[in-house]
Length: 184
Image (cartoon, rainbow, N blue to C red; front, side, top):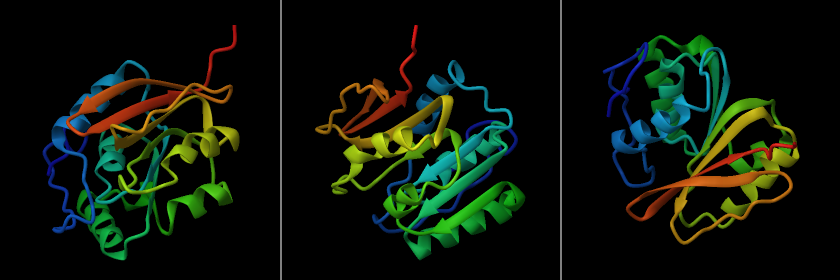
């Protein structure tokens, strides 16, 4: 797996060999970042990568100019790969890596972010709570975005806290974009 573009373009990212981590494929990352290009100015932004796995989404954001990325991952093996990838890219000063459960992180309300990636396991039964926790706690800056990669049978509705959509389908996976409603 490689970084697609930006400062670290073409650099390899290592990941866990087994199926306990589902890294975002190059095709998925390319499509998501193309969609984000019209919505987000990456220069200096704060990014949160929840259920980070190998950290491919957060590292891609750093490559495109993000100022800092917080990685939250429960698997110590996966955290080891994120640390190794950050060292290999010489970006340790721009990352914070937390070995903890993503829901514990969200409930503790750590920081504010311009862009949040969440890629929970498909079997994770609290995926539907993630947007409400992030937008309800003010962890997403005004104008910020949340992207959740999830099984295609999970659907989100708009609420007073957030707008769910657009969605992008990749096989059995959907990625849903979330943002704050625009008050006219």
